[in-house]
Image 1 (cartoon, helix red, strand yellow):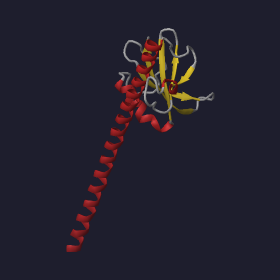
Image 2: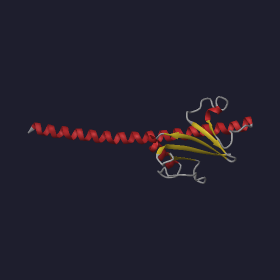
Image 3: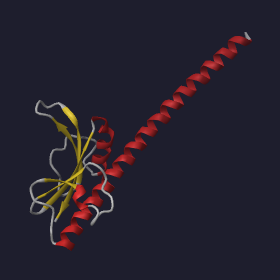
Image 4: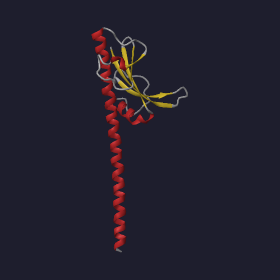
Length: 156
């Protein structure tokens, strides 16, 4: 009888431990996506500010209507450039972009939620009244998911 009670208590403790581990892992994943989203926004703001400083100080902007690697801002306007950022400027707007891998879905959902666009990645154009950044799907020619793209909009 005593062995049966010990076995039942042991099973209950194992179940409780598994439940606690699952709950904790979910919290860690959510925290990681929030940290990654904050990092994307902060890096984009740094690159956008460097574009503004370059335009103001050197009276030379980023080339218009072509994708330019953000590394062109270093070392004069930004000491070190976060990897993978591109700048595409038009007459009134510059778009600072970074391609993200397919595994970045949670980060993209968090970015869009923080931007006030809801937890979705089906945003296709900037809502200029509500947000200056978003995260969208990158699709190939056959509409297969290649990953995601984070965009930060800089009004000039």
